[in-house]
Length: 220
Image (cartoon, rainbow, N blue to C red; front, side):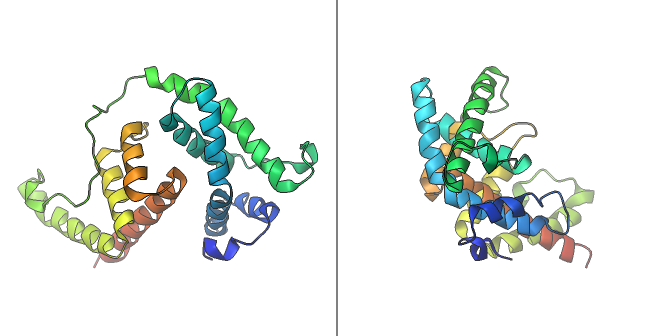
């Protein structure tokens, strides 16, 4: 199922589908529902996060990160219960619920700025794969690395240019346990004219496509 097929479903249905995320057989539908859910609420949540952050003296970079983390938190714990909401309609209740998550997450997000970061601040958008001959590869590994390189290149050629840029940039700079530095994610949003939520979806699609190529063709 494509997430586009769920665009007109009720928010109540989307949340019910999102709750299937832990079921391997229904995970794809849950992911499609989550994408439709994010597209429905992302602009409203982004504006609210900007207001929350501005009132506390924080900039738009933190607001965008906060909105993304709010969606990620909802995916992990889709526990909205309309019977406990003060709102009279379901969608407004969901908005208020997301705002509450954002407010709770802001303190943790801001405190992370004081932690050690592996980034220098000089990171930039990556548009193309590094030339194969520039990679530090041992002689005995060259055949295997070359085959993998060609598969990744073919997979990226099947994707749109924005997917490719997102994949290459994250692949180059992503460090385990850390998100990309905020100046870099801001560059991506500006250059690609995408929201952070959309960038995350494109990233997943690109990584899935590369993994698909590696799994199908690597053993041949």
